[in-house]
Image (cartoon, rainbow over all chains, first blue to last red; front, side):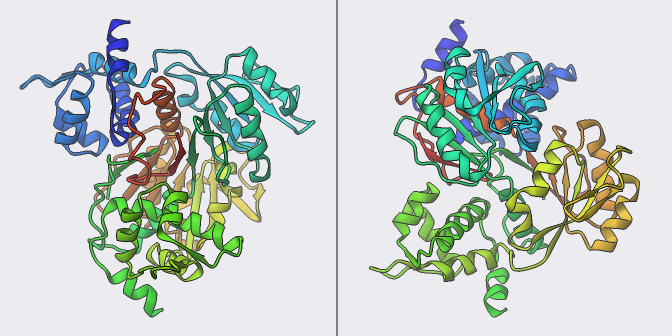
Length: 237
Length: 237
């Protein structure tokens, strides 16, 4: 664990670098699956959509440097990135709101990899509470706090209707869950010390509309690419 | 339409500014709903999670300047942002893959506002093809190209399994759809001139894990906030 501790003890990693780590994680995971053992910084930068200097600077913050000629060793680099993201730890997740989006997340690969595992499901619909999803019984939302404590949940995901999201978030916080991913279109009011990431599935549609309405260089090719606090990669344009 | 044309004719809007426009759009929409008529740049910046100077610079690119003392007029500013995003145009969308995620998107508010409307649905599952979702009959994916041409689809959303996504994307492009939002965990290979935005629902989980594993200042409070090419806002930390 020395590697991870050393990575984790580093201080003051800039937010934009943090936001790019999932992109590196994903690109490197695909390379490992394909048996690719080495990658140059420019190749990796091209896949991720950042410029190579940004990529080298990001990775150097975690003590990784490519070798001229051979580049980076892929499995080693993936381990460093995952260590930096703490994906080698166990991350029990609660999903509250077992509608279409909640079910989509339960079955998505990202929610069951890299240390993440769905540990608690909750809803208020009598037709859903008590049913089994992916080996887990859906609890009534009233019992969310005790379930979170029991399962040592560290991240709460809110996929409820907007009207329920604030009280669900408060219940999560009361149960000691201080990291929340909110898909409900509501700005949550929560105590300091709670980290909320808000996901807006329509934001990307709007960005597409912007570029679509400005063909042929109406906008700069997005430096946004990897400069992103983001769930997205701009692959081509 | 002078306003929109003038906004659209401006050149070289930086990608990070574009990526922040949906955040401004959402914050301002909430304010309009609540009857708020004026907002200062620092208030709006606080809601969105960017610094006020960034916000003022972004908005000035579209010719909007706040007034000292009263700030911005909310409905006017929203109209300018929407004009910049071309949300005043009609944006017929095709969703391919009517599983849980596809259904979640059909019903999400963002996919039926700001000019977006779901115009074509397609799948290959015989149990789904021919059924009605939200007033639209699900077509067989084989008939996707003709449906896209018929409905003048401008944006294609791919929510299929990974294995199907490349061929679906090619069918969309063949039907003249050059803007694609891809939720499948696959890097699509498409001709130049096609804009693909890749959405990874797990990336935000990974960012949460990063901050969670570094309590008490282990990382800079994310400048990522609005400096984002992003579907997310960091609200607090």
